[in-house]
Length: 288
Image 1 (cartoon, rainbow, N blue to C red):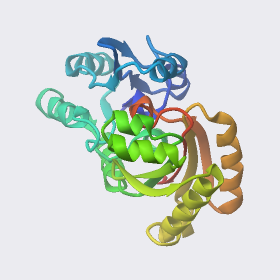
Image 2 (cartoon, helix red, strand yellow):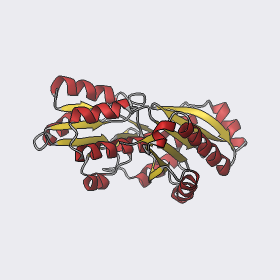
Image 3 (cartoon, rainbow, N blue to C red):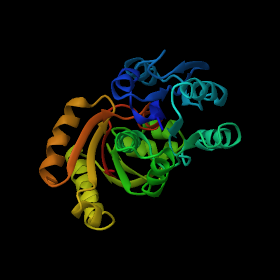
Image 4 (cartoon, rainbow, N blue to C red):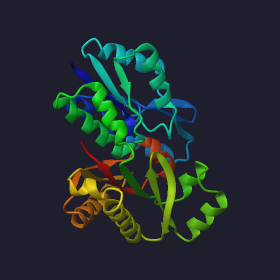
């Protein structure tokens, strides 16, 4: 049986990377001042941040279920099955819409995975799925593994400014004003797909220390057995902060020399909409 892996651009996998990996990536729609763009098709990361900094009205949207269905139909001309890995259902209705489509029109052929992932943890899911395909695992088993291990990941994100959290309604204007005055940099967390507050700092160095300590705690508690068995990975992500991300990568590798470090990549635009540029993140994720 020949299985195809499909994901969307919330994974951070670009169209060119998709070709190299041998996966299919659905571009996510991005609405900017009422006009629709598609990530990495008609909108680059650079263009997105230019619009964001210019205070354009930006939001992300769901891909058309019809378009995804057409893509599945084309893929199934060459493949027997599809494992589709969308962004977390906690952040978008996309997953539920596609799961319904798969059950009603592609039963037994397409398996939609809701493993509560986004960005770099979602990318790891794609890599896991590809490795399972190489090992000859059937689509049902791949989907089951990704679902069962969905909660075995953590992301911690330092936000450089409260401006975009305020625009998204995640903090009040008053809190944002006070935070900006005091130069507060919130540290957020994603556990199971939800973006929540974790801590507050004033310096990047303090934010990195807090994130490293948070990962250390997770690796020593929730993920202790997985770590001992060599099943955990670490990754760094950022938004227009590549130089600091490379430094952070070195610090993460030094802090956890026994844990595999996988990649340093930009955060997906669905997260960047809320955080803005200058963010820095670290993730711990189980691997196949």
